[in-house]
Image 1: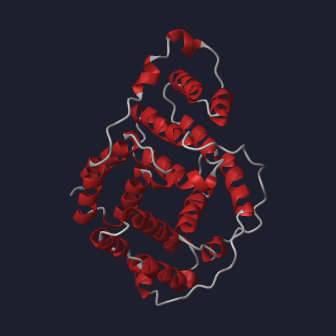
Image 2: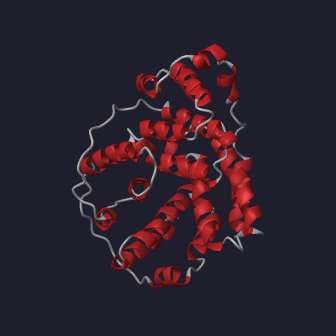
Image 3: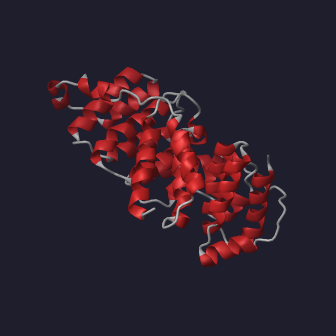
Length: 304
């Protein structure tokens, strides 16, 4: 498959995931799975895995019908677009749980700004007031949009985020904290489970991003890092030669692991999402910690 054809296919899959009707937990949103697999397929772009592509295709085909997102835009009159509206109005509506007014403000801001993708970051910042619930979703949603950042897709992704925002009552914005510990290796070593790994991988990638709303992202993530008392845990280490080879030769190691998980037919979605997080850590943590990461990988693969 040509790289351009692969990108077009993945772009369509990501749009389907962002458009679908979804009422589940934000940590299991389809956009997270599809973007995770898109990242893993990045290792073999010139010769992508048919097993992974078929799985993506089958998964997206099972998603519920697309939302009727345009209804909120159609209800907005030209007179309303001309009225002054502030991001703070949108923030207040989200904070108070008023979906109707939030949609009205969002539509007016979107239309007045000529479909600016910057609004995605404003919603993302609001969502990050609940790191435990939303950070994994926010990271993958923003990256999924960035993969094909066409103006006509902005509204779909705005609706994807705002639907998740109202799944659960938001806490109030937190006060920014000084991040006492800036060593990602220590946080990684203290991750007790897949949720810890996924939230840390998403948070750290957002911290190291160049988004214009990065100060707001850091405010919420810094509070979470300082409040989240990860205690040091005992962890085994095993041979990490495969990981070292992956880093040196850019092998299809994680692609093969993803294929194994798919063919295992057990807890496929959550394990694939965690696999992508571990792929990120493989490239990000100090190499001396790879034997510990290898153990986490083995545990993930054998947990079936």
